[in-house]
Image (cartoon, rainbow, N blue to C red; front, top):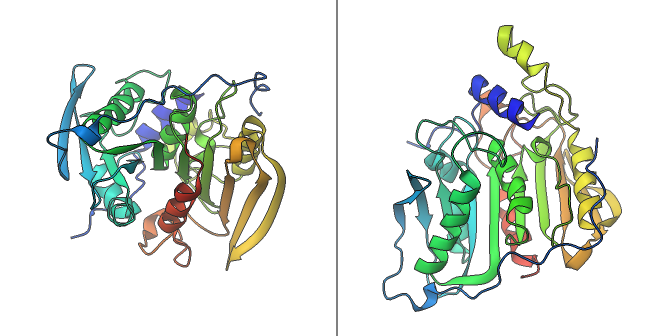
Length: 323
């Protein structure tokens, strides 16, 4: 189903960002998780020449891959965020839309905004056909650790739409390397891992009027017609709240509560998660396929202007227990 969903959304060419500015639950987990993938200290703190902010290129899997880099002031060590764009978007649009590169750097984060492979509209999810984006993003984190003073055990990923799917998939594939993940308008695109993983914090945002990735699940791309409609009818997504409950079961989270956060915003929270992690879902009543905050994207639906997802993501990352 994941492969079909990838092909379907690429056929749709759905966008997850504005132009740049003039821009069924998983099986029960095994009794004990595997150890985190790595805990070695970063070597970039001793690098004679550190990476500079701007556009960078690295080679992986025989391809030249590009990423934008934002670096905070000070010697470090600094935490790292991967900011992943949606389908038919790109690194520049994502950087402008999420504002993580600017706001995150001001709050002390190294922010890398990578680009999908040349000629591709989006990421290759794990175990699907295409460039090895899991390997590329792993190599990118390694590259940052060698070239910058990275705080070991403080690596994060955030994403919009299909970028959110890729970010949450990395929880499983990187097996504990990520401290926390933020998913905007895409938590239900990838199901939780079929096995236990080390504790990880997850924060998600989703609008109930999202017509591309429906909050209540079911068929995506509600406005599709013709052959695309026929393809969309082959895909059935879990409801977002069911997806959150699946992550709660996997991460050992108990004591679910729901409360009003702001006008038309509800927060589903769990009082206790294994290892001091956090699981939180912000539901925007009437919200579209959008990133809550100051940037309005009318063709993607209503934006919650009084909810700053960027600030809330960074607050969550700040509080997440280090590895």
